[in-house]
Image (cartoon, rainbow, N blue to C red; front, side):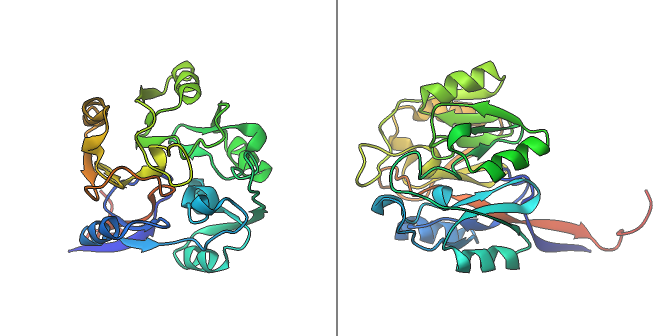
Length: 265
């Protein structure tokens, strides 16, 4: 008999099966309803008054899910810390003190893509950067401090971005990267948001967008690029794409054959 259990995703941003819980803040009602229809529960960070108002609920600013269930968080996220600890995540003692001015707001804004960490090293929380370095993870250096915001992860070693510095750095490091047109993601208070902040994998083969990805002028290229990795695109609403700080997968559903558990092959 096959039994199912909910487990933390140990390779961040890259679920292997159906996602059960995600971290997302300030998600619009229609998009929230759609995620719930997929059976996905939403955990939200606490509002952070240390960053600019439009970013105060952005998960990719306030929390970094690292390898093997390690989590780096900003100060003042006690309820989120309890929630993630209850799911089996290991919370780092090193907390990031965020500031309102860039780059003081990006110590946790680094994108792990399965084979490497994309970030602006000088702006990243030292303990976070050292954690990856001690694990032998390649660091792809970019001038873009909003690295996680700027990267939509399609599969291991495959990303979409509007940022040219990330695009060039990834090409040099043998990452399959699609550069799309910039300026078609809304973020109130800013000229535009980022594609990574408007998206997230909700299963190995499904990339969800907060808003209608069909409205993006690079939609055909995005769809074709994702299809190369067996990934389909889902719009969670009919509205314009909106940067909410990402849809960050936390847990997934895994099956186990109990009748054969412990038996040798």
